[in-house]
Image (tube, rainbow, N blue to C red; front, side, top):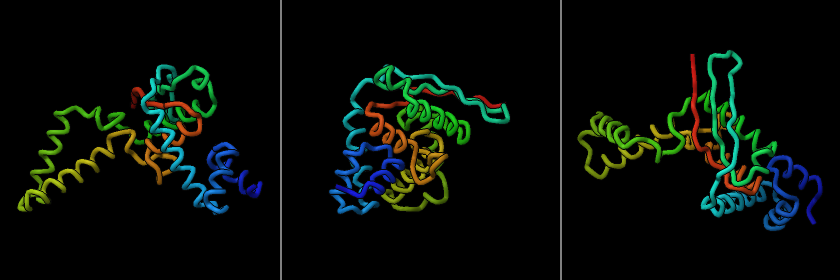
Length: 194
């Protein structure tokens, strides 16, 4: 049995169950950092399993920035109406809407970027001085890398999370999926600004 104060500390940080925390501490010989890494890996496995499920319930939430000049409507989906009423789910929806207000993404995922936008951006990158004159394989790697950096700026799921820059939005959603126990998916959003 692990030290109860360490279990409480990890529970406050992660929201994981006492059973899962005890398993993580047992696996890591009571090393807090290793236990947190273990829980993160388990959370990713859970999120991957749940990704195939249908998220047909959820909420639409609104966020208006304090100045009243920026507002966001966000549709966040889950599997059951029970989870849609959950305080953690509502807090996640609020945080995501606040993130959208702050960082102004254009698309939910990279798959949502229209083909013409992808083609145009890749053509602009290919025409830059950083790419010209390099071998073909190097050019392709540079184009791919610069396009990925561009996508990370305009795609919600790839942006660094506004409340924790060490994580991207996708990781925050995966952690919430592991904690809540259901698939969570951003369906769509709209950002309005004066």
